[in-house]
Image (cartoon, rainbow, N blue to C red; front, side, top):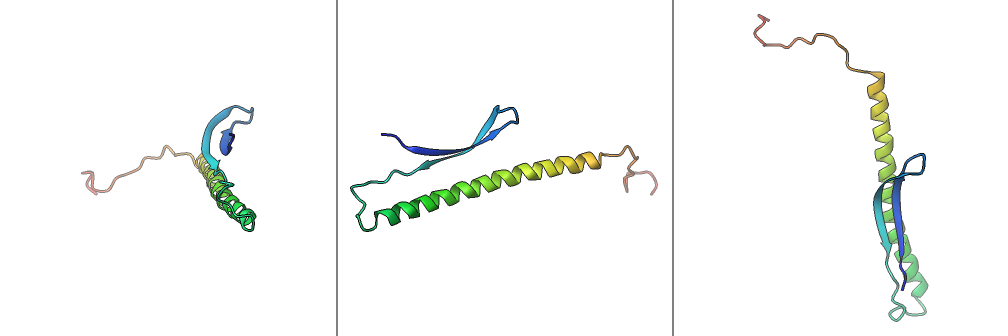
Length: 94
């Protein structure tokens, strides 16, 4: 039998896979345990729960990438200066 799986994968611009960020298995539905009157409701609820978990992890990965890019841009805008930094209380008489 086959199962469904959703993978969130980080891919480089040229299509090279960098890493799999998360993997979600969609739970199988036990048809014997599902009642005809509520089967679609059970399937919909399960799909919604898994979908929200996937979306939450995807948004987290997006935020981490945006945050890392923003930090890198900030560091490029304000590189460390070569100024002499004086320390207080280092025995220099001050």
